[in-house]
Image (tube, rainbow, N blue to C red; front, side):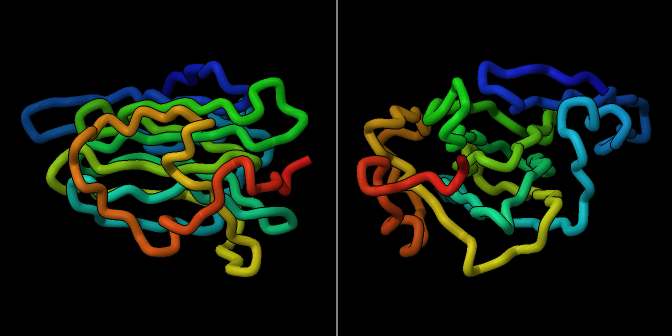
Length: 183
C-alpha cells in the first residue's frame, strides 16, 4: 500500500498493491500499520455501504464533536467523484476542497479525518460505495453544508445532468449561514 498526501492537511489517498492473474485480483483493502502514521488512532468500529445511480449526489456531510467520525472510503463497483472539505477552523486549509475519482478500476481509497465534510457524486451508471468509520452514527450530531455553495467552488463534473439529491441535502446551509463545530 502507498499513502499519497493531498493538498489538504491530514487528508490522504491510499493506493493498494493489486495482484492480478487469470483468476482475478487480490489486494489488502486495509492495513492499520500502513494507515496509522497518517490517521493516528483510527480504529474501525462499523462499515457502511451505499448503492447509487448515475447523478446521485450524497453530501456534504459530517458528524460534529463529540461524535465526530473519521472515514476510510472506497468505491467497490462503478465510479464516483469523491469530495472532501476541510471544516476545521484552525486548519491552514479551512474551507478548501479536494476531489478525486474513486473506482473499481483504480481501487483508490481516501482517508477522511474528523473535521472534514464529505460527499460524492456517482459518475457511472451505478456505484457501490463503502465507508469504514471509527465512531457510530449519532443523529443528534449530524451536520452538513450545501453541496453547491458557490463559496466552495466544487466542480461536480456532471454539468447539465439533473442530480439526484435527497430532500435533506437540498436544505443544508451555505457557508455564509453556517458555523463550523470543529475548533
